[in-house]
Length: 451
Image 1 (cartoon, rainbow, N blue to C red):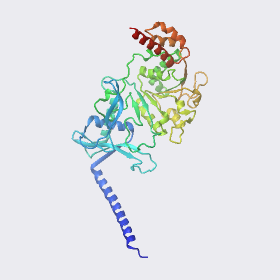
Image 2: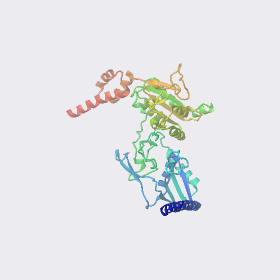
Image 3: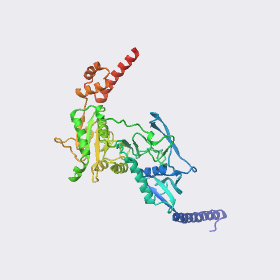
């Protein structure tokens, strides 16, 4: 049957379009191979290495004044101003930035693997990569990456006089992101990562107006944080236990005992569980990593856990774990990619080495803790040494501790101390400190009014 002219035109057009598409694909492939002979492409996947590479570009290279720019801003504490303000910064974007290392040019920007089409597997999650491109022979890729890592490690350890290791880093996952978020967009500063040392911004971005050292809440240098805290003797024993653990690395390894420790601290809110961990970290000069387990997937938790192994000795703090797990069940469910209890257990106390990590788990409801993690057993043992080695309950302040707090807060009004101590019986540390503060402030303002 003969085709009419219209049908013939349609088929002819489709055939021509197919031929042009195939030809374009072939030409593009040939062009890319030719370009590959002269241009090297380096892709960086992991977040820590991405930050190290970006920081290396911003700090050691000169940014070209031409080309697109990507800016953002975030609320930050600025130390010279002693207050929170919006801080603007430039970051790497999907449009690559041209940097110059002396006379050598290098392009640095984001590319997206997965949903953007780079991945060959349609089931693979979208993943943001840092991509470097440079003319063959101008850079050694191995040396470029190693120089970035060396600079990062040096900045972590400090140069010249050794700086303190103590800082607090809050680690968040991206496993429960809003469905409206642009999955292909490069992550904002701190998004899906962590907040370190009181600031969201690190050297992977170029801060406008301020220096990086101007940002973040200043960590108060206290001779002993326990000068402002008061705990009973059984809690103070933990302080000595933590110190002995830190200085006994050689002893543990000579006897082939894992150099790690695990505590479970339980009690009502405000009894001082987290304050104790912070005070120990300050005293022993240890970094603290606080995990937001409700936001994390299995892969995010495992990957982050491996990353903190490069910061040992350190403390891994899981606050209010009963808010995430009711015994073995994730309260938010696991269908949406939430962290599973089995993955949590196997990561913190499974086959992999956890040397140098001091694990602290806190809860307000110890009955919700599964025995596989660790609950009280016979004598001084727990049900699962190696994950949780020590369990201690935090209760209301005893009379001795109440008097210590009252003397500190009410030092200008000694006549109020004994009354406060008596009325504060049964209160937690937070409640009693608030009681004393209210009394002291009322007397302070009363005296000012009458003077």
